[in-house]
Image (cartoon, rainbow, N blue to C red; front, side, top):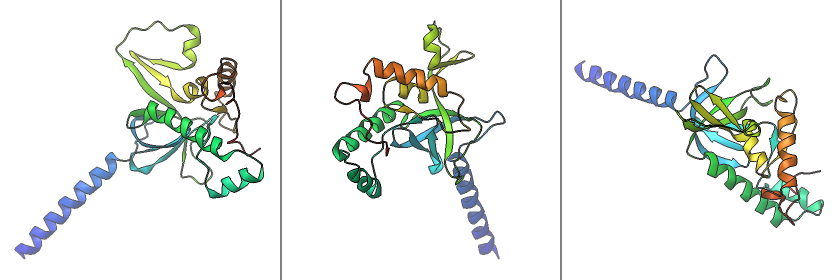
Length: 209
């Protein structure tokens, strides 16, 4: 009887630890519809990443080049696309986002639709803490990519990626809150030949049409 009790206690302890660990790995949503202080564990491509607990997140309103799978590669070949250039742009875009947020904490905010049609991927705007308890005088145009909340300043990741030329604007209703902003930033990036819009590289072979 004593032996059974000890086993039961050990089993209960194990389950408690497992449950608490699992809870730590799941992004917690508050009443304002935000995921605050969640850690990015890996970056899939230029507009998609994973949180703790393997929750997939897609940055809405933008379209970055990706590393094509076999099926996509076959389609691109049929269209006469340069696969080496597609892969290169995919790597460049992924590395840019990786340098911004990989292994770091972000906060997520949502538009009208918070998940994709399968209900598995979060569709979000991501923000990274730029500075805390800091005094900054932002120019009016800088307010497009920075957000002030109290004594904290956050970098708007979706907007920043487009501003530096590593993604295109992509309007997908009903999540269209920042469509006009992303279009403006894209035009600025292209005019200033930033990122993938540098001379001889200003193409978008990752698009299928």
